[in-house]
Image (spheres, rainbow, N blue to C red):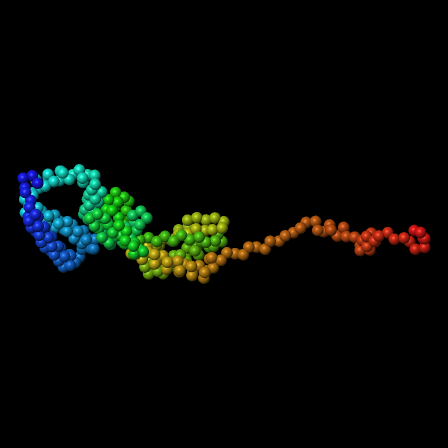
Length: 294
């Protein structure tokens, strides 16, 4: 390479130097992760960012020592980089893009290990941020691998970026004959009775719409941890249903009996014909007695 001659023996020695340097740096990194970083009270996401970043630095230092033994300095590496730039530009473009995106994620910490994120139709907890992709564990315990470039250029919803507070919205529809004040009182008391619902911000009951047959309401409440949202929402549904049955809010009034009147029946009495007349008119003509031949 240039004016440097590389022999197989020197390559073996360089590989040994790289392995020793990387193993020593990895041992130091393990000590920091198990002993030093826990004492500094860093969160899991920051610890992962420091560990991954230092791992990249250790790899570069070990590779630099091995290449220095071979006699390849940065000026001579520029020759190799120039020869490989065309291949990187075409064949490895996506890999380089994901690698740089992974570094941006580690330093900006917009997405951290342990965060609950939503990317497109997938959502779950971030378990690892690797060189090429980020691993997300869904609620079905499935692992979703998302390229780092998608997290940088796409739309990502982080539910725990600033804090872990979450909002619950429960829409309800009752009969149009229900008492709105009673419905509001039931929803309010159900939210207040749940211990996981925050007192501040206070729960809200909104009257969102009405018609002759239905009244629409919304119960909005906040919880301190978004991971409890589904359980609290289910508990509120149980409590609201029980109170609605007790207060008979779900019961609809019975329809009024329909009275049917038919006009003109009083005239039918005038049309009545005596039975003797009916029988006489319906009997066949018979000959009179004593009139022979008739």
